[in-house]
Amino acid sequence: MSWLIGAGLAGLIALSAHRARLLTTGGALTAALIGTVVFGVGGVWASVPMVVFFLSGSLLPRVFGRPHKTEQRTAFQVLANGLAPALCCVGVLLYPERSEVFWLGYAVSLATANADTWATEFGVRFSTTARLITTGRRVMSGESGAVSAIGTLGGIMGAWIAVTLCIPLLDDSTALGIAFGMGVGGMFLDSLLGATLQARFRCHTCGATHEKRRCCNTPAHPIRGIPWIDNNAVNLLTTLTVTGIALLWG
Ligand SMILES: [Zn+2]
Image 1 (cartoon, rainbow, N blue to C red):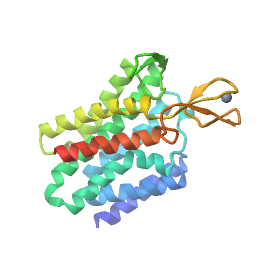
Image 2: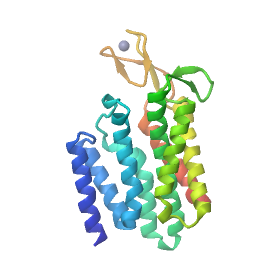
Image 3: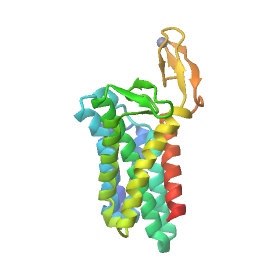
Image 4: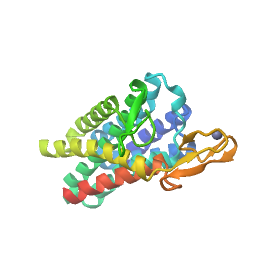
């Protein structure tokens, strides 16, 4: 029964998000599937932190007056942050006797994703310059691998809110502390991978460096990282890694 309700609610939210141009068709289908699994396994208490993560990621850019940043999320973008928590729910379903470990992983994955999202939004909105996490070089706020004090503070708030919403799922205050700490750690891992693995390109026509493969109607040239690793791939790698560590540890 909870699966039917879950499918109905997740479908409704995904459809509304699609109508509001927050998700592509593929993104909406993926979000509906993930939402169904989360509600089917964990009901309302598991769904609340997931919905808050999704809504805050979509609404923060609008609240902060960066509506142009709210591009429609594709299936891969949804999976980048949604696959790890969805897999944890499948873990609860398959191994109910180890459910507390998988709920810890669920909280860690959402704390990491929410911290990264909030750090980016706060950093880009309130901080003009940031430093590259690897070399300390001054860079534009929002660049991959860039960290700033305000962004970090926003990320810590994001992790804290996600973990607080996961309290009904977690065993005790130790699990709560682990999830919060790992969420903040995951945010820094995301920056580290963004500064090293994530591809950056230079356009030989206008001289700009950025994360886009094409610029000025020509292919841009890779100057850093692995060419096929973009921000979504870094998010996917980070959430899966941090969640995996939590599951092994728990
Ligand atoms: Zn260009």
